Amino acid sequence: DIQMTQSPASLSASLGETVSIECLASEGISNSLAWYQQKPGKSPQLLIYGASSLQDGVPSRFSGSGSGTQYSLKISGMQPEDEGVYYCQQGYKYPFTFGSGTKLEIK
Amino acid sequence: EVQLVESGGGLVQPGASLKLSCVASGFTFSDYWMSWVRQTPGKTMEWIGDIKYDGSYTNYAPSLKNRFTISRDNAKSTLYLQMSNVRSEDTATYYCTRDDTMGSGYWGQGVMVTVSS
Image (cartoon, rainbow over all chains, first blue to last red; front, side):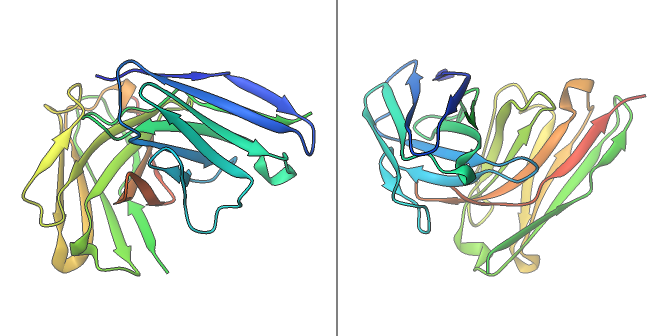
């Protein structure tokens, strides 16, 4: 299985701050990476697919980048509604594994 | 509006079987691959498996392949997850998802399964 190592495990940011979350795959995944946001008590929502494509309806302050084994999610200007847990998932090789999650809070 | 509504969860004893359902609406169900994903109480996300739009092909997480079976009824726009010989570690919230381009674009609200005697 491809292991997805996500960091940091938790993060606190001030309003307006730029935040980055990293995901490292144990082997190359050819940009087959998705990012999800999960708010407390809710189902996950797709933010980014194909490593850098923004899902419809997702604010443009969210962006994804990376290649090979290293990927990142950036939030340019933290907003209160961005609090939640973020997960990466590789869709390159079965089984489609998730990262362990990053809990993002307002400082 | 796309909707995925799971049902069938609850408290189940170790070793028992359970079948989860997910009714889809708001899109042409038979056009999409569908998946099941679970989230443990500790918030770990685990991909369970997926099924091709016509039901002809399935993939599973190796650790679950021998006990879990995914199926679908396109006439009823319904996805199923048959769980057998359940264990305490199967305690989780189970989500059905619609597979879009390189990601699960839609998720159900989830259904809780608790395995305990």
